[in-house]
Length: 267
Image 1 (cartoon, rainbow, N blue to C red):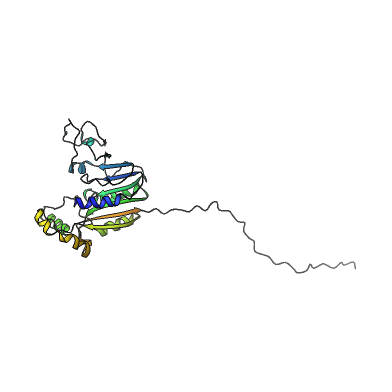
Image 2: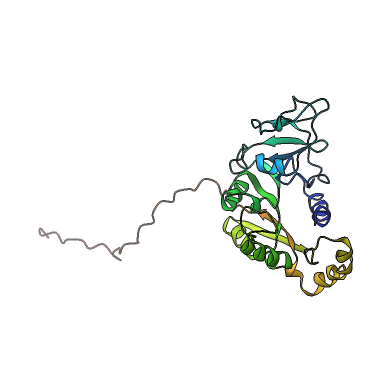
């Protein structure tokens, strides 16, 4: 699944231009590696950073506890917030529900499975809408509840052993579309993938490899993962200049056709 998602991201973000691009969560994917914006950053919180620990600088040791939020680069003291990030990438540690960015300051925002691993997906989407510039692009990846993976997740939650360790329930593609429309986004494209059953053996995965091509053709909405690309639309105003006040036009009155003269009494 990570291979499929990485391929989809590489093809989408390569054509997005601007100055600032952000990836929220899931450091296992380098969502911005094919993007050419000058300022690209990976934004993590304590939970997403702990899910895939980065490599510490040489000669440093992990202190075992999350440190204060900060920016990680190619050097540092080896604290939790100063680990190495991807090449040519800045790593920022903060609360994803309270992004430390100005409104309308980001051109591209990628959220790989971030909505499923946050405690408040609606608030996270509102934060994404706030920091995105008009005509900015939002890319969302998630698990599809209408799939074999979603069925196993539902059965696992009933038995107390969920298949996907998400903080929230898996969000259906149709719900994502409704949430985006309410926030003023316009959907550009959607893509489904990973149709094979959730098996953990390579030989069985190879036996069901035919389902990838068949599912992409016959039952595309039942893929285990989906990717949604949306554009932030803002209604604009057209300047027409100063409005000139016109004098009111009086209604025409009746005028006599001839002047009536009073006769002189002396004659």
